[in-house]
Length: 539
Image 1 (cartoon, rainbow, N blue to C red):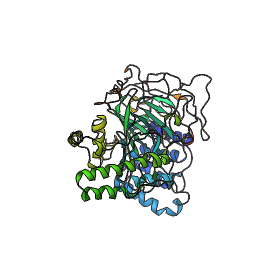
Image 2 (image 1 turned 135 degrees about the vertical axis):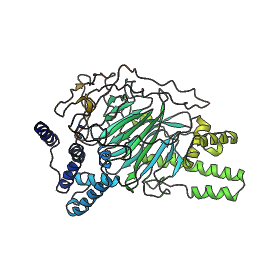
Image 3 (image 1 turned 45 degrees about the horizontal axis):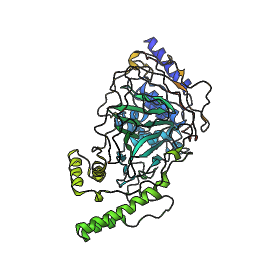
Image 4 (image 1 turned 60 degrees about the horizontal axis):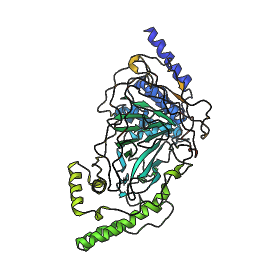
C-alpha cells in the first residue's frame, strides 16, 4: 500500500514537471473535480486540456483506452458534467477574463458544451458533390485544392485536393487537416515522396496504422476501421476518410462531423453551420450569384410540361454550377501561404490547379433517361439518403461509382464503453501498450529519420518534427483493401490496382510536434527520405 501511494505521488510529480503550468484560478476547481472523478484518467484529462490551451503536446495516456480529451470528458456521467457546468457558471466572473479557446477554462467550457450537443455532418463525395452542414447540396466539379471546412478557433481545418478524372469530372485525391496543431495528410494516389507503403503523413513524416489507434501529439487520434480512417479531434470534431480506391487514380469521400451548438463558427465549402441553407454557397467577396436558382427550378417543375421543365432546370443548374466552379471556388482555393499539403520539390498548390475545369457542366437532367432510372434504383437499394440521391445518380450514371452511404465515425460513446478502475498507471502510447506495464518514467526511444544534412522546415516560431517511434503490429487487415469498383468513363481506362504494403514490415511512427499551430507550407519543401525505418515495439 505504501509503495502504491509513493508511486502515485511520483506519477503526479511527473505530470506537474512535464506539463507544469499551474491551472488558472477558474480552472483549478475543475481540475480538482476531474481528479476526484478518476485519479488517473481525470488527472490526464486536466493536464491534456492545459497542454492544448498552451499549444503543447498532451501527456502520454496512462490508462487502457485510446480516448481523445473530448472523448474522455464525455465519459463522465451526465450528472457530474452538469455539476461541472454549474461550477463554470458560478465562477463566471473569474472565467470571463481571457475565457477564449486559448485558455484552459475557455477550452474546457467549449468541450463541456460539446458533450451536451448533437452532431451535424457535411460531405464531399463522388465527383465531388457537396452537402453542407445546413443540408445545402450541389455538385462541385472543379480541380485544385480547397478549404473544405475551417473553425475560427484555429484548432480545426480540413482541406481537399480535387484532381481531374477526365475533361468534365473530378474526384477527391487527397485530404489535409489541422488537428489542433498537428498537420495530418492522406494521399489516395499521388504521394509527396517516394514512400508508397502508407497514405498518411504527419507533419511531413510517413506513418502507418496496423490495426490500432495512432495518437497525435496534440491529443487527436487516428483510427482504422476497415478501409475508413476516422480522425478524432481532441475537441470532439471528426473527419472520416472513406477510401474508395487506391493506386495512381485513387480517390476518397470525406465526411466531416462538427457540433450543432457551434453556430456561425465555420467557413469553407461546407458552409457556416448557422442553421440556414440559403447562404451556404454565397461568395464571401461579394461576387455576383445567379438569382433565385432554387425557386426557378422548383417553379419550372410545376409550370411547364416535363420536357420544358427539364430544359429550364438544366440551364439553371448549369448556370449555378458555373458560378460555383468560378466565383465560389476562388473564395476557397488554397494558396501557398495557407496550404496544409506536402509537395515535392518544384511543385506548389498551382501544380494541382486547373481553372479551365470543367469544360462542360454536366448534370443529372442531361443523362439518358434509362441510365438515370437504373442509377436511381441502385441508389435506393443501397439506402442512399434523399438529400444525396442526386449526387448518387450522377456518380452511378456517369462514372459507375458505387452508391456510398454516409459512414458513421468510429468513436467511443458512453453507452458502449465501461471504464474499469485503473489500479496503477502504465504507458499507452504509439510505442507501448498499457498491458505491457510500462510506467511513465520509461520513455520510448526515438530515432532520426531525416536524411543527414537536411534543414528543418520553417514555421510560425517552430520546426517540423524529425523523430519517430514504432509500435507493435497487432495483425489487423491492411488498410488498402480494394474498393467495390473504381470510377470509369468512356474516355479513361480503369485506375490501376491498389497498392498494398507488406504486412511483414509495419510502420508506426510518432514524430514530435511543433510547439506552435500549423504553419503555412513553403513552396518547395525538402523531400522526406524515401523509406521509413521500422522498430519492433515491445509486446
